[in-house]
Length: 302
Image 1 (cartoon, one colour):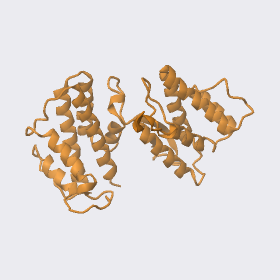
Image 2 (cartoon, one colour):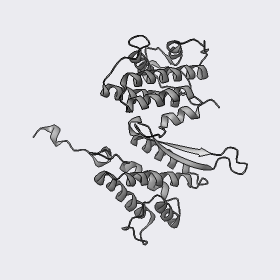
Image 3 (cartoon, helix red, strand yellow):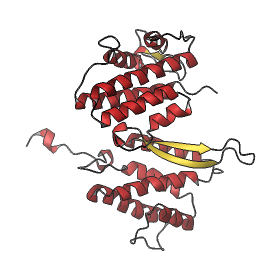
Image 4 (cartoon, one colour):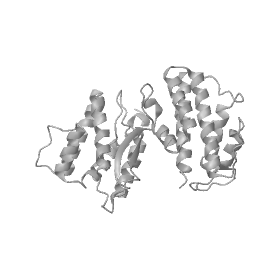
């Protein structure tokens, strides 16, 4: 037997995607438990019931960690072994209600939330907290929480909002959002050239808007200005340096990546090119990731 077939993979680095259902990783469940133990036990039981994660195996005598571990592990195994979409949805619902009701007065809460958000991001979900900033009593109180998939392939046929679309809407980049939604629609309908075209337009619109908002670039109002705007979002240099949020990306820390995607989508001038289903799907994933990267690197202006 060769060395490759004997290679062992640790359980914590196994992908959560099996033959069908994809669900949350063990790391995300562990970090959810770390946040959950900040609550009273009776409140946790109520939240588990609200998310339909009540497990018959959970005894009232167990501690909070074991209660959460049992309920969430049962749901995870149902999602993976039985392709149980309701069990997977229950895990997401539980995290949403947990974050919404998290005790904001605890000093270490931000660290717990950051850890959980990062684990969710690796699993392909972005955590959004909504606040009512007009509330005179508590403008920072979380009023609603959403977990949205980052990968557009997770929502190809449903009228759901991806994490990217939510980010674009929140920033007021409605043009880019509209073209991106059309790209998803065309991809789901297997209209690959149309999907490529809308994706290219969404990317170009975002590039122009970010250049206007974060650099000295001025909107000329003419069509086809994306290439000039893109040149403002990264700097060509020979060395490697860490990117600074809000400033142009270094060439070797994202600059070459976004330029390469631009070139790929404009390989026939403004025409994005034809492709089969596989290439169209890959394009969607690449451009989705690039747009999320740009939005994160160039945050909303205060």
